[in-house]
Length: 202
Image (cartoon, rainbow, N blue to C red; front, side, top):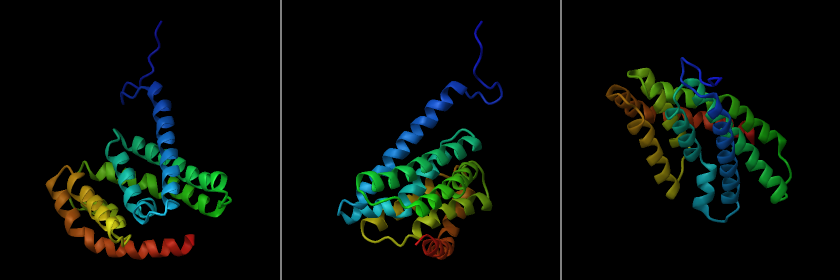
């Protein structure tokens, strides 16, 4: 007798959950190592890509946008970002012999369990709906990117990522329009919030 492993309402095969989560953890770990290697590469543009929020906001947004459900968006983004954070600090401590920075790792794991899945869920929800609230949520994600105040190559990356978030991810015209209108005012607010976060983490 064959026992079904699928949830009849959601159509999600439970046999695919563990490999997917494991795969995301592996990719997150590789991303964390790559980010730390970029920091120590001596190349300014590479270090900026790993340090500024643009690349990570884009990854989290795409994980949310591509997820079939809100729960999947939360789980996928949290697993990826937590694995990335652990790998980043583990590489610094074990390979580069910088020592463990437990306070910063704890802070990033906290963000992996709170702000990161909230952002992914917001993008998942907003990308599928129309109106000012979905537009504001997508503008908020783009604002975090623009608030990084990147220069040179990083500025180009920041603008490109912001355009993806406010132009390509919304599926409705009204959402896209509101996101474009709100992104600059929200970037100013996000800049203030990032300054406070940087003060707390430093």
